Length: 587
Ligand SMILES: Cc1cc2nc3c(=O)[nH]c(=O)nc-3n(C[C@H](O)[C@H](O)[C@H](O)COP(=O)(O)O)c2cc1C
Ligand code: SF4
Image 1 (tube, rainbow, N blue to C red):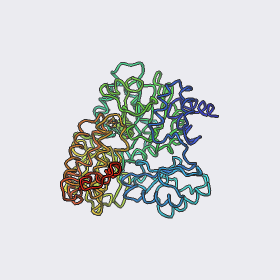
Image 2 (cartoon, rainbow, N blue to C red):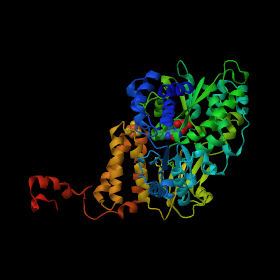
Image 3 (spheres, rainbow, N blue to C red):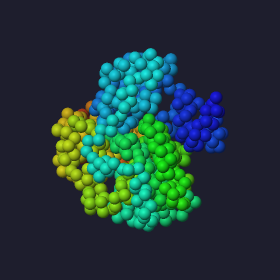
Image 4 (spheres, rainbow, N blue to C red):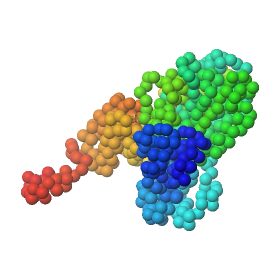
């Protein structure tokens, strides 16, 4: 049975992650025997398969429950919308503690990092399917359905609907995109003209770093290799970001069109969409769009009858690791390895997937490229600012009347955005997720763009009622949890920062702890191997600068207090030495 399951999964897609997902779903865990069989069937080292199963949070070596429930613990839906409290409530109803599988094997329950549903209140995944807008009544009903062992198909269908919540449309969201129209226009151009249009447009990557897309494509085109690859980064793991979820749901033709334009420009025959595991529910929809595009000759051999222009796209689903959004970690993951970021240079444009020249771009970047080819670089450049051409799609969540998707020309002020989303008494905005910038109300006239506040798309709003220290503690937990553990400054530093914040939030902090935290934060920022560690301390450093009172009001007054009770820790030694005199105690 195990062998046939592996053979069947492998025949559907040879990627290791795909095979492991199939086993996890069918057997509710990946046993040591399964690890051995997979390694043998895929001709991979046993240690590689074993390490991969250990690395990704959606794979388990011990059985999960038949209902596997994961609550998002992100700042917006877990903390602000009460998701963590609702999890405790479900735990009481089902008699299960978070992090466990119930003795009868019926249900597992745990927390997970942001699942990209922050515009829908508290949210969870049950067997990979999202349920949003949780409240006490829904929790009661979920508990009853689980106890009754009702199949998910019999649960209320509307629970599983995820609305787009598009509130403001601009350059990319306003226009509908006739399928294939961009490709037909592109084929009127040659490769050089296509590249030139993208370069002239001033398009910069929408995944956060903002590198020139045209230059990236040109470097890849010029790089020597046996094959060139196009990879779409749909890992969208930054807490508070969900715009790619909406694009993957409602603008997927323009995404695949953009990837195909890129393939034409760089000379690639194969593309991959790396879809975050939390969005696995979108897989059937994405696959049906791919199938339709193949039927329309928009993918496959000799696309639109152009001899030699062949390209296809495969989807690989991640398995719950934020670090796999970092492009070199993503490539490792695509190759069936742990998502450990590579040493760069060399960069993916010359040495990417399987060591070959590879373009990695964000979902929104590819969509913008498809529109640019259709409408021209001048159309794109006419919007935005000198250094930040075009528009930016934002995911807005937190304390506002209308969370959802907003598209603005670059250069828009935070104040304008807050007004539009109905955030009346904001004290702070986290721009670009925890790895971005935390600003206070004195900075609301700052502008979104690569020249001022750059963002991959997340904007979390915090009203005057929020405890900013609690927000920063939540971010610190996220980074400590998501650190891949490869380099010491990040692996150890993120935990020290989390613990230090916990000590202050718990009312045991002193000025010494603040100084120490500043020191560690700077070290983690400057010494970490990749972008995760280099940005993990941002919320703390920003918080200390912009919201010092949130820390200082929790400090106790003496110079130093240890993390734990030193005197109590010596109790065992006192018992062994049979001493209990004053000198055997620490005051
Ligand atoms: C820890 C980490 C997570 C990242 N997550 C994402 C992500 O989810 N989506 C994304 O497009 N880029 C992400 N990036 C940025 C990518 O490394 C890369 O810059 C991007 O995919 C390039 O595409 P672009 O030029 O279109 O922005 C992440 C970077 C880091 C360091
Ligand atoms: S900085 Fe953190 S996430 Fe990046 S390689 Fe080091 S340990 Fe891994």
